[in-house]
Length: 193
Image 1 (cartoon, rainbow, N blue to C red):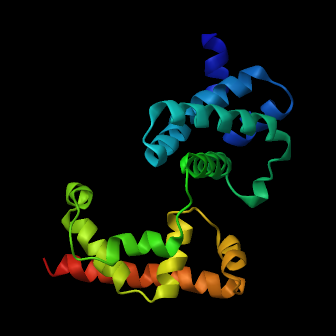
Image 2 (cartoon, one colour):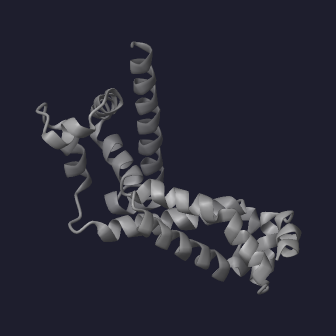
Image 3 (cartoon, rainbow, N blue to C red):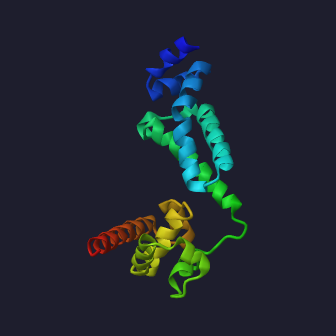
């Protein structure tokens, strides 16, 4: 087994994936060993549940194995491809866990509408969280909604375009402008401390 591990450790991600596409179990095993930590870490960071993260990681690596024959290196690196599979599965899992969907406007307003601090808010508040809330409040409603849809709901610009019934370019502009303004505000607040 050690000889097999040494033989596959030096192979590129693309070579391992090509081996998997042709049914090479050693390449598959090496690929899983190479990516299991990163895939699990990504899922765990998003769901904060080790059991669920483990299930997601297993499914992501199985999908990578099953879809290895259709991987196209012109569309991105293997690592990006695998981590995108894991990210999408994680977002799907988070959506499934949410019993009642929350409207993005309600989600934003939960943290911005009231100056009163609930016990839950007090438990998670920090300077960074307050700064983020102030920065989000400084965005126009369209930019704020686009960012919430993109980063909390995991929607792509195309999905936001469809859901909000706006052109794709407008969705992208709202996300980009919102992120730029958010970054500038957070950077400016950080320099005033």
